[in-house]
Amino acid sequence: MKAEAILNLYSKVKTVENDSDGNIRAFDIDGNEISIDMNAVNTKATELQTEQDNTIQAKIDLKASAKAKLIAGEPLTEEEAGTIVL
Image (cartoon, rainbow, N blue to C red; front, side, top):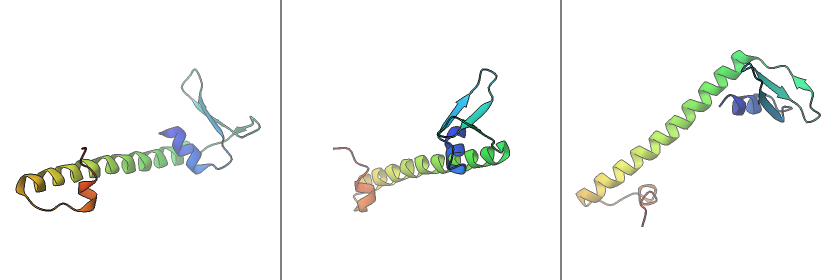
């Protein structure tokens, strides 16, 4: 998620690598190293992870809602119907 955060924060970064010591290095299109603020990267990575977690949970909740409505014989919303695998 940190690589994605770096790519989101630094538009000139084209490559992100982890060196053998676990340090993250970012490079532009010409291979020049770009300095990055790891505090900002960590904050952005946390935001991206939270967004991903929320998306996953929303899908789980939607499927549960669709299942409950099917069991109760209630009509589904279009979004709920879209979660059903036929």
